[in-house]
Length: 393
Length: 199
Image (cartoon, rainbow over all chains, first blue to last red; front, side, top):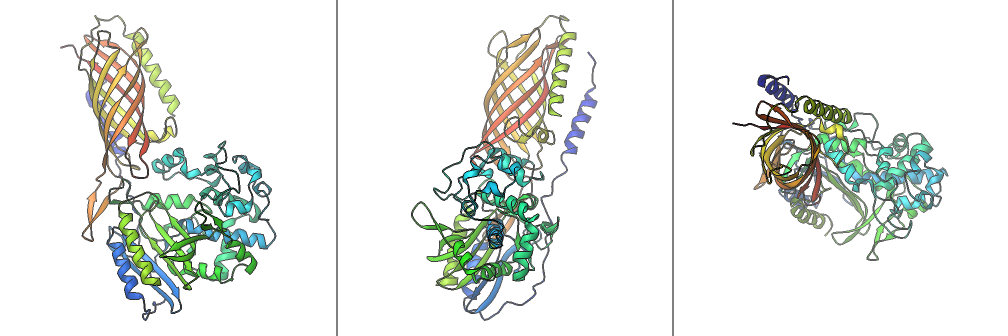
């Protein structure tokens, strides 16, 4: 038997280990940004909001950016850090991950197509979804466009699949496509009869995106033309160029991986994850731009009044409460009715809501992951409640 | 790649086995040295096997036989791997092994046991203390694991020393990863050798 020298074996092992010890600096350089207009300094609720945001950043949230529109006009602020490593302060001009708030933009785009008579809301999705995608969906012919928009489709969720979650964590650089997401639900039965109840699913908006691509050729370009440009959203970005998530004024992202109040920089994982998501996620925006979108939408600058009413036709939740419209969440925040959407990801989270009883719009974005539980969230929720009180009471 | 690797390893084992038979009296001694090189991934079993080969590690251990036929043994050891995406790991482990002979000196193993995985974070982390962010290094978490494995190996002899190369596929259920993800699947592809030195 041939003898291999100990030195050779040790050298081989050492080389293999060293080749793999080039640390992945999970860092993406973030930088400060230039505030285009000074926020009004006479906002009567500024002190209370600033105090609540300081409380939020002392609860273990690295940084928060905030914008509000009320009877007093626009006001923006930020607290905490955009990057813990460089102690870079968060600014209102930093781009925030919209996460699932992107669904409201996608829904508005679908409803624009509806107004252009390019699709019907109560037609089965198989009329618009290419067969190469619909074949992954059990019972696709029973599901309508409206059911996707208001999460009553019953189609199983792709990101509940352990195979997807483990692949995302182990191979964050893997370029998932919308079609690949659907492979995770291939052959799975519908979770419930389509239209019979509400259950929030990201996959519904992935499918809407594929339909929009089939109708328009490029859903992202369509959103830019039909949503961003009419509202003047020059600080909102979605697949406008391949490197749109590498803009330096995107804050670093942090995640409490093990739910033990220790956060790690997951900026690369966050950016790669968001980069691959379509329709259900994928946008970044300044807080003010996000509020400008919701304000423009609800003030009828994008859709006809009757279409907007469709958007605000709520499906009921399990307790008989208004739950969700067409891309709009109906929530109770701080004791007040709120319409808008929230978003959560591995390394960020946000809220964009309008309070119809107060005529107040706000956006708050944080650079701490909210998609998995953390003890940090409990104190953060208390700080958010203080924010709602400062903003509304 | 993974299929070729496994076939190559199996062919190597059979070749070694065939060329090394009947050389010297065969003795089994307890407490051999078990050395492994392994490849780790956070993955469901037999999925994304390529990703394993980016994350290499080493291990050392030993075993005790429960009978004279060495087909029921308890193995114990420690292993370490580098995984740049989900964090490095260090794991002491204990496994009971059933080791039936397939043909002559070729054997297989089915093993199950318990481990304690100390998994570090892939990037530097932070902890807030009294409102001030302080570095927490790569500090991770210790988690109990249930490693389940299958192996293919061969017994060879060099003088009085028994050398048994093997390949193993292990699936580990890692418990308590986070509040939202209580169970995480991980895999190890291992190759190594069990060396019984007859002093």
